[in-house]
Amino acid sequence: MGVKIGFVGTRFAGTDGVSLESAKWAQVLWDHRHVSHWYSGLSDRDPATSMVVPHAYFGHPDIAWINRHAFGTRTRTPDVTQRIYALADYLKGTLYEFTRRFDLDLLIVQNALCIPMNLPLGVAITHFIAETGFPTIAHHHDFYWERDRFSVSSVTDLLWMSFPPALPQIQNVTINSFAQEDLAHRRGVSSILVPNVLDFETDPEPPDDYAKNFRRDIGLSEDDILFLQPTRVVPRKGIEHAISLVAALKNHRCKLVISHASGDEGDEYLVALKELAESQGVELIMCDTQVGEKRGLTTEGERVYTLADAYSQADFITYPSIYEGFGNALLEAFYYRKPVLVNRYSIFVADIEPKGAKVIAMDGYLTKDVVAKVQRIIDDPAYREEMVNFNYELGKSFFSYSVLRRKLRALVTNFTGQDNL
Image (cartoon, rainbow, N blue to C red):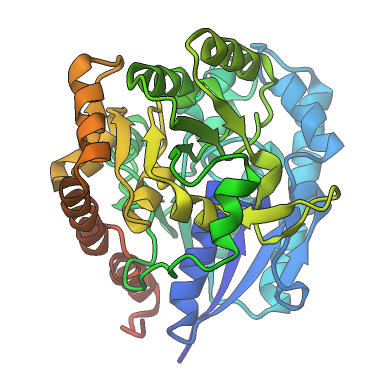
């Protein structure tokens, strides 16, 4: 028999890591006749299987008010405490309604019990599980202690209670080994490591005629060498290294293309990157308006491409991040069989590099050796082919849906006693 599962989070919409990974979990569970329902404050999932509660979204004005008074200060006023608990009580009621409405057997909480974007929701989920003993899998993508902006707070008591709670009904899931060790060390809570995954069992579709227009539409010619930076423009992505790499190759055909916009941290970094590119003679192309979730047209009538289209037309992927929770763009480079430059961020060193990944690795700064290796990839198609095929097989072994299926089977079986996945 299938299990009725409720996914709980602040937002299930768009292309953020939590929304994407939860959709993959739902797909693998769906393949085994388990039915998924969705509870969140913002949602693009099927309304018939969803419950949208506006206060569950971290962007709600009431939640934003709480966050302003909770972080960056060491004490809080009684009305802050009162508002947190009043909202938590209201949200707890909606969780009772959610589980009743869809007759659920199991909850999967997506990131709402580890990063305190919505304090009342975390407290509500904790109280709900403590009161009902509801079987719960808590999928933790990033913890508050990994983020500077949560380091000074007036809600330490709530963080200890709910982010995450140490309740016997919860099975905790972490996405990298550092997070797994941190959770055990800080909270005495064990967790199962489930890496982020892609569907390596299914080869990517070969580029069609639509995708082949991508280069021309962003202003590149056929013989240009497209270096794709498939990330948002935020400082931790280390994009200045990608600019320096393209400059060091001293080849006017090499162009750096960034697929995403600046995100929510302002445009100062983007301005600095543009100045750096200009001073180093690198053509930097921002195509965030032409890369979207699905194909279509912009308001100006230009074609919109998917990220998969952009990958299909790239010659090389730059991924010089300083810090990543996992590194989905690295898996995507493996999946689309593209060579990739990686700055050896800690999770790569701990969880991906030991598997034998063949990448061009730099250690915080660019060297002549790194540039020479990239040049060899440009010059030597056979070397490049061997590298990308190896990485695809590595992805299939360690970061595929079959790995996720195996892990989810164990998690669900622990609750149901039946191996029905």
